[in-house]
Length: 445
View (spheres, one colour):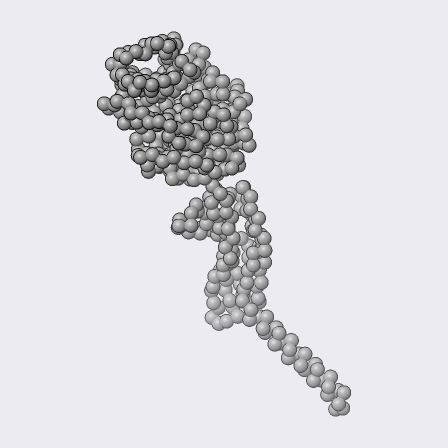
């Protein structure tokens, strides 16, 4: 063999040896997965990945797992949400939970047949996290009321712990003010906004707070005499009208005089209708009704307070037609909607115009009108909001991620306070309180 042939033979031999060595090295590499794309939106999360699979590695199961939680300290296990073909490299989640932090990972169970006996192992990708700012509550608020002069500001009464008044700005999607009280269990009366700039809030022991609705500073505190419990109140001018259980009383803000009139009164809710009139709801079955009282100048003296009643309707109402915990006005205050049955009353004659239950067969939690008198109603036990036009035609069914309680009409669309669990509420008339111990959040769309 001459030198040239010997040289070429060595080159071929080294090439074969190197090729075998390279092939053997590549076949010893582990199974590997890399997330190449992670895209998020309100309704959807898209995940793409790349998979490096050596020969002899058999994928037995490829799954997508998801974890949804609202705080770092919350322990929530990952759950399997999809089982995919072994050659799949993409997944779209169209049912993204409404939580502050939603994590995803790809989990592969595989058999490595390059070793004997074959080894069963699990490979997980890195976690990918979808984070968003969500306003949360530890329980369903007792009351939500829109600020009269600001379309996107809402005042929220939260009875959790000591009790809180919270201001929500829907444009910023955050709480901008919070005021704490002493005992949330005593805050069983709906607060009222008076003169467009003052919030009056009462507890059952007769303590009434006058609060600046811009900065939540306490302007004054009044102590009304109570022998049982304050269960309804309202403010007209310098007079606080209130019920001590079933007795009509009033308190003169200017003089500090407190008068128990001795009159029997069984209203379950009071609020100002205008500068001289009070609006009242009577909710117990057998005593369902609504009324407007007028107090003219000089009718309240140091010993009594006379009034004029404007409810001249003798219509007999069905049970569960009126509920102090569920009601809303339209913008002109010509109509009110109340109760789980969605009973809409015309204030001109105090008669029912329509019952939403008769249209849909559904019970509701709360309602809100927009400026065009379209009506939003949250359906009990469903992730659904019904939208009705001014003629009460059901024109839209809005799907939500949470179980909706309070619809909030804002300048940039609908928002809703919803729960992470379903709940039911039957009726004030059967003694039910709107006290739902369910974690909830403000859902934005």
